[in-house]
Length: 496
Ligand SMILES: *Cc1c(COP(=O)(O)O)cnc(C)c1O
View 1 (cartoon, helix red, strand yellow):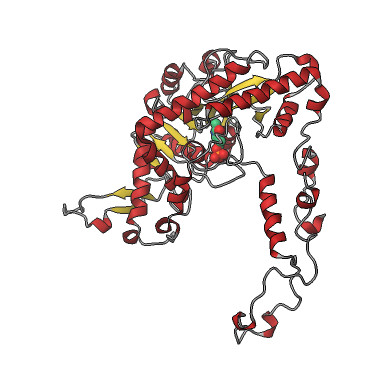
View 2 (cartoon, rainbow, N blue to C red; view 1 turned 90 degrees about the vertical axis):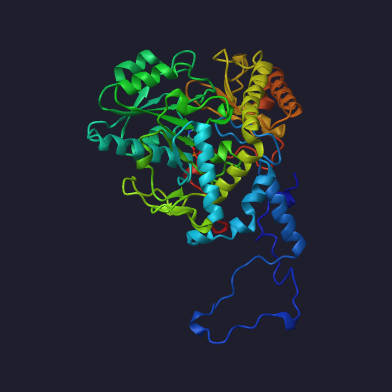
């Protein structure tokens, strides 16, 4: 790597007095008259001074130091880092949407409200739910909102005080217990069986009239479909509790199976995983929440409604068809606005461009691609759970443990091959978890190349383990000290 380009800060490239532009005196802005002297800056700002090519190359090179789904394959399990069609970004960035002010009156924002309403209906169809709110800004906020709906329902039946427990499987994503705790509920863990699914025998004694809900991810974080859902739903409902579906893994289910039909009462969907928003790095998200019939009145405010007639029976003017309502029975507001509009716009563009058949194909391809990688590598990587899996799966490191090469080493060596590492050491069920999710958008050639790199690393681990253990060798930054970085972060130039 070119140290000169990669290793320096823009301030180190600065030369006193150097300029990247020259503006003819006549074109220079005049200071507006009347700014009081005490408000004018006394000392000149300390800014880097460089020529234009230097600054352009600096930032362009820096942008290529980062790994993105536009630069390479990104099999980060549980995160669904799929390539998203650019057309959806273009739709969301269209000036009619991007230029809209959040406080635009409803008669002037009919198109945007129609988009919200249409997406909400599409998600109801996809999830098998009665109604959706698109207001939450993330999967985790969707979980919290869904649990608040569940609490509001129990309170409406006079059982809110006594039902304070939420049952969460030991394989669950960390946000599940966190959301339950933030909601003021107590987390109770249910164990998984050898095959990775919920242990129904362990669940039964946990179910009583102190339980508010059980949260389930299906397929779970091991990529395994929970076959016992009908029985689990019956047991949970018999105990008077509700069943919550964490829909962050909805990708393989699209058009194939619906949580509402499986007996779930409340669910959230991660638009930024399944429905075409680039995800990761804390980027924008949306965690719409759907509920079955009977729970919709507790969904948060504000809501988007479609009216065809006025209360007196007159047809509604076309500029007033979509409106915003505040329901007194709602649990309140979870966001100041109607959620993350640009993420919703991408999701609707994605759903409409695929159509229901296209979505079903996407779901099945996600499963096929993951299964293809799994079956192509299970002779050299340890597959702790045999059998069918969906859009993702977990290896427990290399099969041959004698080399001392760990999952961390494998992940680091993959960077040298030009791939983003899979998710490592999650789920916590195995010592050397390596969780791979290819997504449906990758071609056979990309999958074959990745399989080739994984096999090459396995071969290298046996023949030259030191090279794998000291990887990466070809990246601009090699092995940062994660712990020191977390304990003593250097965040600005001044702190160097
Ligand atoms: C990503 C994820 C979440 C949380 O979603 P965020 O938008 O990151 O808050 C919850 N559950 C599962 C299974 C996930 O993969």
